[in-house]
Image 1 (cartoon, rainbow, N blue to C red):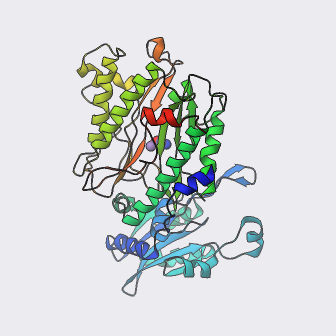
Image 2: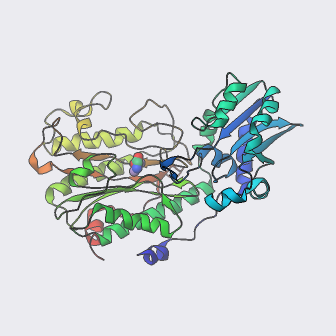
Image 3: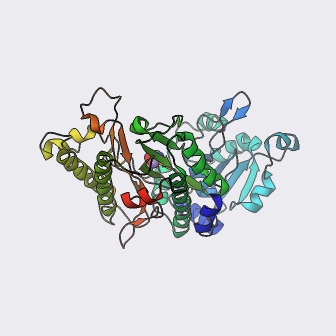
Length: 443
Ligand code: GLY
Ligand code: MN
Ligand code: MN
């Protein structure tokens, strides 16, 4: 399985180069007043049980601006002798601590191996900040979720602004090297989904699908970008289901929403397929409708289109399709609603997609359909397109014919917006009915 995936994956791209990170620092500082200071604090580590920690995930802003991926740390940008300085505060070397918790680059290691101008120990940050902030007129600060550093900052500066607005505008347009990393993450996740399809058989557990996909990620030195969702039958109609604990039975559909990270950049793919490899006529009817709507959503990813275009495109197809299938008994206007809030929302209750990047729900906008963002699509943006229809048999707030009960279908791809039209980064993950039926259970 792992070798099959390795054989079709291209070469893994290098992490974002230091020169590109230096350019990001210059771009950020170009927006700051010379008498201001900008502080970005890493995410804290969090406890899972007693002295066992969750795997640490770096703060995306800190990583974007310094490449830092270790635990602890904070970056401070300040102006000194006519230049902007990026100073990284890190955990100092400590053989005792490292023996238990792993190696630390320390001050010298951080200075030689990361694109920063100065390093210092986190132990000194309180004193240093006192001196640096005493000379500052204004402060920009991204906190670390109640970190000690936030408390120090709060005690020294009463008011600060949020620099995320500036950095988000930078992050929302992906560079070529970011796109290469995202393409690789999309390819790895696509091939992992194919392996799950190939190996799927009735009687297997949802957790088996999860282990195949996440095993492929791990084998290729990657890991999930968000907890994998594997839901068969009614479980597929619960949007954030991730217990992945049920056995998949003959005749059911299974929905898998799983993606991975490469140098922090996420992929995000959903596929839905029959556990036994053959769609029933009713499953096929809903699948074809969701697929038609998803393709229309992808087509709407055009330079210059408003943020609302994708959600409108998917919604119109779904609303009409639900009427054509007899699931909604109303006019198209009633099905769609004046603000895309009509009767179809009983069965498609989430947005059409979101920006994708260092965060799976990346910066720059909310969910398509969930907010009023006036953003226009530009080359270099990456979005997901992920319409779905969900007919939970367990729901007592909807009335549907028994033939549809227990069907939950979502199809999700990652799309790069370009001057030449949308590029589907996840094109290696099949989604036509013929392809799916020929792959599922074929191992
Ligand atoms: N996997 C999270 C999402 O699709 O938005
Ligand atoms: Mn998504
Ligand atoms: Mn997803």
